[in-house]
Length: 250
Image 1 (cartoon, rainbow, N blue to C red):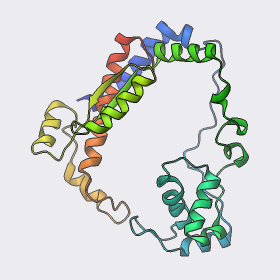
Image 2: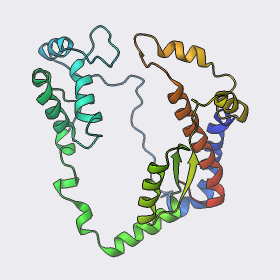
Image 3: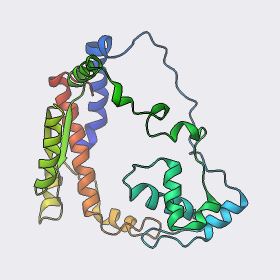
């Protein structure tokens, strides 16, 4: 199936474009520098007061629980990130969360090394889009058309969203391709997805659902999650196949 060969296709795609378009797309003479590798994710450094406050704030009822859970973090994600759809800076996200849960102020978190860099909604605190020259805009649009292929993953019955997204993309002058999503709620859809290779035969839905039902995951039903993952992986495979014909590396 496509899942099994996707990484191979992606590797082949990168190699095929390295010779064909690296001269115009990449600076081959630039030195390649990689940051030091670390197998461990960085942890927030909390004071004793922060840890005590954040562990004793009432947890979210719609979220898994575990000993020592940082509820300041969980509430900030829900109230400051997910609900406003990621439109707030980290500072404003915590401020919004503290308006609903004042206790969070005592457990205010600082996960950034240089927070002042990320507190502006535009670089240097100004709207850089306001003074873009037409020549710059035209060059950027030309680069985008030559190098970026746009795909829209859309469920068969989501007509309203498709009309909205496609209209906006046309307004921006972008050409795009629609890829159909996978709705596993229909009878026989799961078996058909395995037959066509969208879901690998080795995938065990029963075991995956059992893992999702554990107290730590507490995901509930995963039919939508599996369908979403399968559709996105198929979309990436199709994009990799199309890239060679369309001559667009991204």
